[in-house]
Length: 82
Image (cartoon, rainbow, N blue to C red):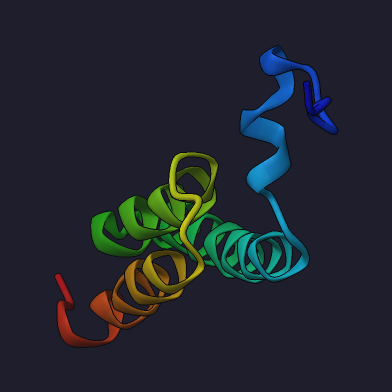
């Protein structure tokens, strides 16, 4: 019988690789900037996008999906100005 490198309860932690971690750090940093700007200026769109940029990397493990969703969330405040 082949032994698995990780116990079954840590299987979710094994899918996090370096690129996913770096993308999450990148989008989280921009999210913090958008969030503080939106809070200071009372702007809803940057505030919401900043919160989404900080939270969504916890739920998306696919690197391509992470970069795509993050890219869309980064440009939304540029096109939607309220």
